[in-house]
Structures are given as structure tokens and as C-alpha cells.
Length: 126
Image (tube, rainbow, N blue to C red; front, side):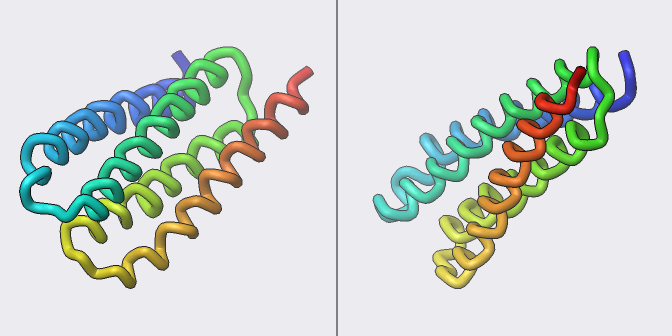
């Protein structure tokens, strides 16, 4: 297995495990501690983390067959998006500091960039 495939498959697997842990923590450890709005914010973070966890796994699988700088950049964009988008929602939910929400759209831009880079990578594949 090449290093790019191994990297993104591993990152996807780790992100999936973290997503399950955070989802369970939210459902069982935070449900009675957060307002309904903050609980929904937490759940949105988990949801988007999982969407992009699957994207990382797809990147890893594609990297088994195709080597592309665009594909690698797409994967790193998804990682940055998870950290900034989902991470800011987790931090906002736990702290109640609404100013952390200003980071969330930056993570969203990384998600969008990741999807565009993945599209370009696929289109450039011969």
C-alpha cells in the first residue's frame, strides 16, 4: 500500500473512531448538561465529521490506484475542515462562547475546497 493511501485511510479510521466517541459522549454525557440548541450544535459537528471521515476513506481508496497532488490536497482540506468546522462546534458547545462560531465557516470553506479538489483530481485522471 502506498504512503498516501495508508495516510488517508488511517486518518479516516481514526476520525471515525473519534466521531463515534464524541457522538456517544454527546448522547450520554452531555444531553442533560447542554441546552437543546448547544446539543444540536454538537450533533452537527459529529454529523459533518462523519461525512468527511467517509470522504477521507474515499481519498485513501482512490490513492491506492491514482497518485495525484490534487487528491492529496483534497484529503488535507478535509482534515482541516474536520478540525476547524467540527472542532469549533465542539468547543462552542462545551464552552458556550459564541465567538468560536466565527471559526466554523473557515472549516466549511476547507470542506468545499476538498470537494472541488477531489472533483478536479478525478477529472484529471486519465
